[in-house]
Structures are given as C-alpha cells and as structure tokens.
Length: 165
Image 1 (cartoon, one colour):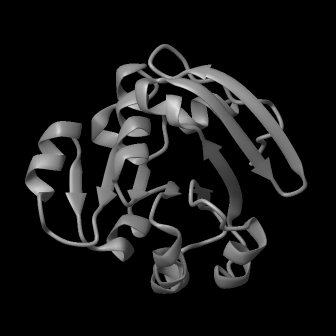
Image 2 (tube, rainbow, N blue to C red; image 1 turned 30 degrees about the vertical axis):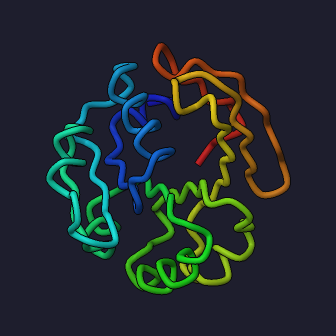
C-alpha cells in the first residue's frame, strides 16, 4: 500500500475545528479523499458543538485524549496560545505510530517534539487563506525539508513523495 492509500484508510482527528480546520475537513470529504466517518474533531467547549457537527457531517467531542486514542493522523489546529497546554494534555496518549500535523501559526516542529516525547512523525503545514475556498498554497515542513504545494482541495489532494512515514 502506498502513502496516499495509507492516508485514505487513516482515521483523522482535528484538535480544534475553527475556520481553517473546517475548510480542510470539508475539502477532505468533498474531494472523496476520505469519508466523514473517518474524521472526528474536538472543540474546547460544548458551545455550538451540535451545529458545527451538523455543518461538517462529523462527530465532534470535547475530549482531546479520546480523539488521540481514536485517530491515526492528528491535526493540531488550535490557537497558538492554546497549543502548549493541548500538547501537554495529549502527550502521554500520543505514540510513535501517530502522525501529527500542525497548522498552528508560529509553532515549530522541534517545540512539538520536545513536548511529545514518544517521537511521532511531525509535519508542519502552513495553509493560506485561499484554502478557505478550497484553493491555495500549502507550505509543508518535514524536519529540515520544506515543500510548497499548489492545490485545489475540493478536487484532489496530492502529497509529495518525501512524506514517507
């Protein structure tokens, strides 16, 4: 099985489901990359959780530890000021088999790795605002390599071959 098939078969967990995470979730589903049943998310509070769940067509919880235990790919999509406390909360549940994808602005890969001592594979992704409408540029950082990918999220998702994990 190649990396794309591995990702297609993975369970995705979004810690935080604000505007950018919601755009990515919608793109993953509308592109046919994965099924809504394979995506879960968390919110910090129960406010509007049912409305957001209905909007995205996924289950949303408030328990980040539950999300980590039930996801293969964990997308960290919280505000920068919340990132450290969220990482500390989930640290003991993150195993080396997990893929952590951070879209948190300004949060460096080594900062994530210092908190998550299990040494999961960590990728930073910096989406830009056109991602909100399904088009744009993603900047991927995987350790010391940086790849810029043009994409049209609503149609297809392509991952460079450097993402062997």
